[in-house]
Length: 143
Image 1 (cartoon, helix red, strand yellow):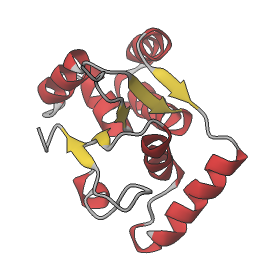
Image 2 (cartoon, one colour; image 1 turned 180 degrees about the vertical axis):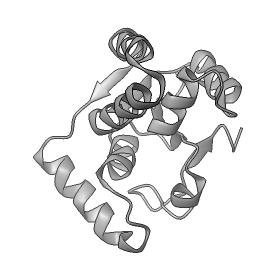
Image 3 (tube, one colour; image 1 turned 60 degrees about the vertical axis):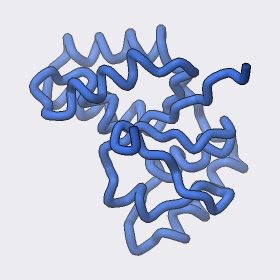
């Protein structure tokens, strides 16, 4: 039996998983806690989520997020080649003003050989394909 694919996690899902008042909290928490494979976060996404949690929920919530990032997730940085690919993704989707954090999600999906992306940003990620040209599987929306 093949192992479960990795899930590349975007900032909105990380944030919703922490904020119990967020309307997407239950879906985000269930996805993150129930995913059978590795949970992977770009270092850029981690910084974005940290900022959101700190500024909206405070230091205690931020510290819980940082504990989770250290204990549960694979936090990945991009090497120079990965940054160049992310730059190309930003250029390809310039009309979306995608940004480095979202582009890094696309690069990590290719690096981890997965199309599974945990995101609440369907507007952007429905328009974006993986580096292989195939659509990404957006969770929790695509179940």
